[in-house]
Length: 390
Image 1: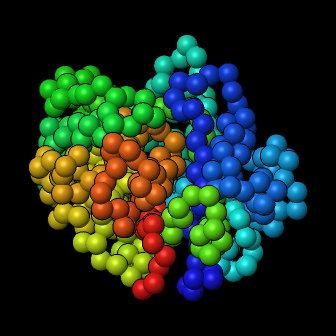
Image 2 (image 1 turned 135 degrees about the vertical axis):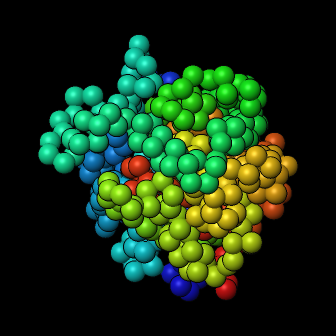
């Protein structure tokens, strides 16, 4: 893709995130898109494309255009790939810009699953959702929540490769060490491996500290042409490569569920498009709805051999000062849970060199993952502060 048609992220907008009550997803989205445009030095009227990820409640849709008082958009769509949506939206925005369909595209995720007085566990419980036919079988077997289904995947990995709970705990501890340096993180108090082991079981083998946060809020990014981005208010973050993979696991004997994720295909595809090798990646921003998700994604991207993710994490490689800085803002485990916008937002901050105390010195290439469903959908981005010349 030539420089004239290449894309870059030019703006980032984030609302207050976490236990923020009394606001609708549409109100959060309005603020996030407005902030992203202002961050780029653009007016809302400069935006001619809008991609909307409506969150778990599907509470925002194409009508967000009216909320934002946008006129004559050339591109407008909702996209629901769950946690893979942010990466997908950037990909489609880049394709639209390259094809001349739009010049400035806002990509936004907004949700408010937390309700005052209700526990975080109820936000994604699926209570009241009707299940029929084959869709009801996992629930009938007791797999009624995301933690329960991911627990099956984690247990399978443990049984095959000898992965331990303590190794998963090392991922949680590393994320918290990064979060301690992030003023936007919801959880900044240090934790130890002992704290992890003493945290209550949610769905065996997953403990409380293996599970992500639940947050209200919104994050938006502005994607535009690389040449235009170079003249805007913020350092551009260039989109070098991308990939998607959607395994479509079947619930039957012989499936690779729990052992191989979509990262195994989308990662190499993104690297190939970017024209770089895995050893050139400086920072990894991994979708970490659970510690296990970080582990299998790193394995499938190839940062360690299959089955060695536990040892890799336990070595301290992912933590501040480690050989493979990963989830440098604290991730979804400790910072904030905005689906795929969590790793994407931190990738933008790091690529710009604006992460303050937690800034990784070498940040020429950042790899970003998005994971949706229960290992059902996957997206990958390769981002850089430098224009792509290879």
